[in-house]
Image 1 (tube, rainbow, N blue to C red):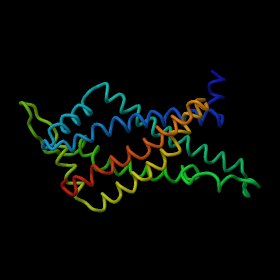
Image 2 (cartoon, rainbow, N blue to C red):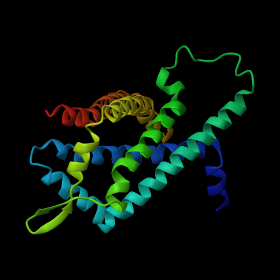
Image 3 (cartoon, helix red, strand yellow):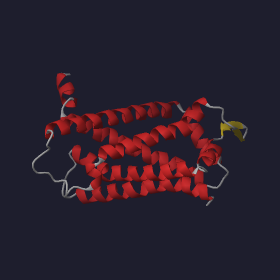
Length: 226
């Protein structure tokens, strides 16, 4: 047990936690995107409302959601600990020689990007998760069953230009965060090989561009009534 505690109190152990929780959150992003794309089906919200009901009532999904929230918290806490430890290791003057110029912007600002993403998550939960679980929602009926009308709530929120701007800006932050984080997670877990690195890089960069872009397109499309 001591070796386990020692591992996760070390810099390497914390990086492993960051990598594992990060990859779990990447998987969550993909699943969440697939569900959110139901908003664009043009069926008056039928598919999305059924999806939202399933996600909020299925016991297994609820368990996974709790794990996801826990992973977000762990990811944030560990990132703060790692950043603090790295700064202490550098000292007040920093290293005499750094690779700042050669490193990409996203890798140097993961803390800032992560903070922006966290702020967005809080705002997003306030606008959608909280009303669904604690608010008085309008109901719709499909095949004799009542569903919370999350589709109408999305339309209402996505008519706010300020929220659209925040959404798009934060999705850009997510993209930059993933640009470095996706590849870094695999490298931390030991998958760093000349044969596989090009594939991981292509998949990671593609994911970092396409997934946030699609997330951003959903509210923009609904706002413009495309």
